[in-house]
Length: 626
Image 1 (spheres, rainbow, N blue to C red):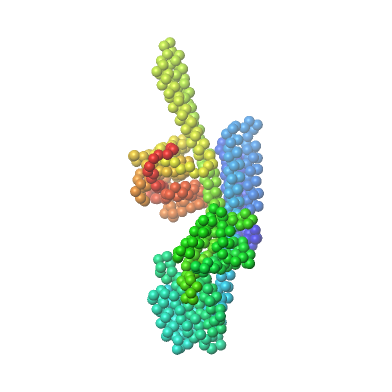
Image 2: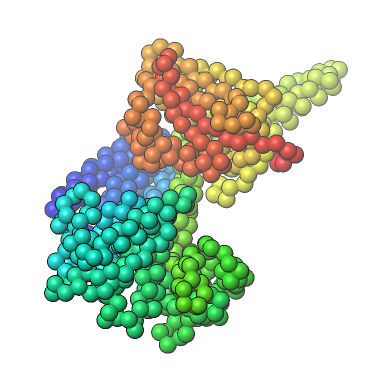
């Protein structure tokens, strides 16, 4: 709320424009729904109004708009119907109300997720500022250099000496050392520095450096390389320590230096340092907060295990034992179970540092990251995607209502015809049992066909988890064409199929795969609705392009085509080329295909029109349920 209250005038002005647009759309939908005889679910378009208002980020306005749209739907329903209300009209009203309420819930959940992300970003910025202040407050001259040895950062302690990177100009920074290092020591210092750069070994040197009062003092100059995964040096991190005044604190400072250098390479969240093989630990304040321990608690592996979730205790102990056995890198995720019952997800990464030369063994320096909010955001996103996919399927079925009715009516009419024929054959003076049996067989066949159509419709509308099965891709394509056949005929679309044989087999969820195909087929049909010439829709299956064993499905039309820019953005959420589109259909298609290990893309063929393709891994082995 504070972020919204602090919004600049431009943002508030944009919100007013969006609100006015939403009000205009709501009024238009209401007038069409209440005053026109259209026998379709016009009120479903109120979801656009809810989405527009939710885009302003105003939670109360979104809730109020949703309730308003529900009220307008009910009023429009009462105004457009007399006392006799058909079941289909009532069903459309219920579908519209469900669509509005579901959209509102998803929009409010999205606003909540955005708010949480903004808080996380604010906290991250606060931690970054705290880190900068920490580096400046370190009682030493902290610096970093490029792989070639050029200074690229110095902390505020250098400024206290009257030194900054600008003193030597933008090229090289090498003269800074000559400015502050005693002339008698500069040659030795630079020789050691160049040797470290050449070999990649840690750099150490003791030289006299001039202080802010002009007096030279002995300094310990040390630097460590930061390497990437391939072992190449990305940066040098160093600190110059006054060893005259702080000889007694030298060990503590070296540990702080190692913590600073390695923690920067990791994540700088909660930090844990462990001396090996003794097992003595040190935790940062953030680590204490994550474990929910007071500062009086002594850090130890037992304290960590006590906070570990019972199911993850073995994971925690395994990571600790790996460190004791000499593992150089530790990377593990596990859960914490706090005394109040709260469960946290944490990610721990650690690096084994070399021995410090004083007989105390090695030390692991690690970062403990609380990734609970990230896990929750990922789970919420997955749930939102599933909810939106379900709403899209239900909406799609509403748009295909005429085709569905035709698909069911056709076999039912055939049953009646076969029944009449059977009665006639039996009603003859000499009943023709063979013809009657054939008529009854046709009745059974058509009844089963009608049952299959209804089962497919129910499966499309049912909200359930993904149920992968071994499927014949040609069979699925044929079933999908039957489902949209009526709509394609209405749009005067000629369908051409090119199915490869033997039929490719994939491991997919039947309903989700049908949802993708219906979306692609209907998009292609609508793209040709304004074309005067032939309206040809081609659907083909073939071997994949990416790797052997993959299956490729192509849907191509002879419509107006797509631009190169649109082809790149076609599968982005909320991007649409339709005036009335919401831009979610193809985005959901991409999510479904990628969840099955495949990819989907769009092409603009030279002959015109658009070509949508998706590729899935083929399945080999025993068939499951079809």
